[in-house]
Amino acid sequence: MNPNKALWEKGDFTRIAESMRESGTALVSKLGVTPGMKVLDLGCGDGTTAIPEAKLGADVTGVDIASNLVAAGKKRAEAEGLTNITFQEGDATGLQGIDDQSFDLAVSIFGVMFAPRPQDVANELVRVTKPGGRIVMGNWIPGDPTLVAQILKISSAYTPPRRKAS
Image 1 (cartoon, one colour):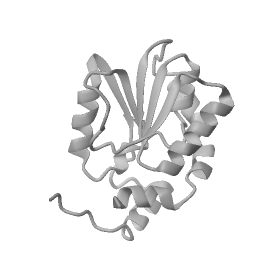
Image 2 (cartoon, rainbow, N blue to C red; image 1 turned 180 degrees about the vertical axis):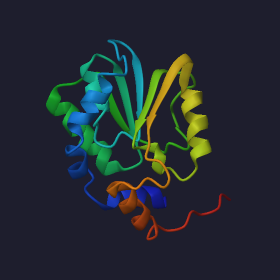
Image 3 (cartoon, rainbow, N blue to C red; image 1 turned 90 degrees about the vertical axis):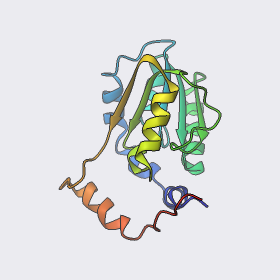
Image 4 (tube, helix red, strand yellow; image 1 turned 180 degrees about the horizontal axis):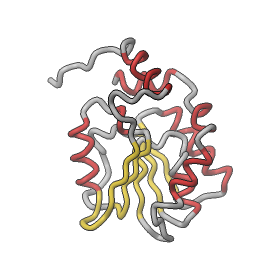
């Protein structure tokens, strides 16, 4: 199993995401999302930003590596009565089944920054975003002294090493 997938399926990250709902909605309100816009939310978790994007009328595809978070996102969208959002499992380093130049906006807020091969993620984001489209990312920065960054630094010491591509 992909060690990154295993890591994100270990815990209940929906509990952490609940504390970020208000900030997710506030952020999305600044992105210029409009009805009918095609939006990819990559590393979407349970929909902290994907659901507010859909509430603004965008056609949203949420992709996350963790099946438990995809299931939680689907459950939240259903509870909200949203029909313009889909959640699917996928790896940000290789977005299988997503066509080139499909999205007006690609968003990843504290999502793909955890992917083991950043250049592959960047290539995929560019590939699936339409010419003239936008890519918006929110990431913690290396050396960040905040509590969350320090927790991630400590926990990364316990993450299995990346396997070399065959």
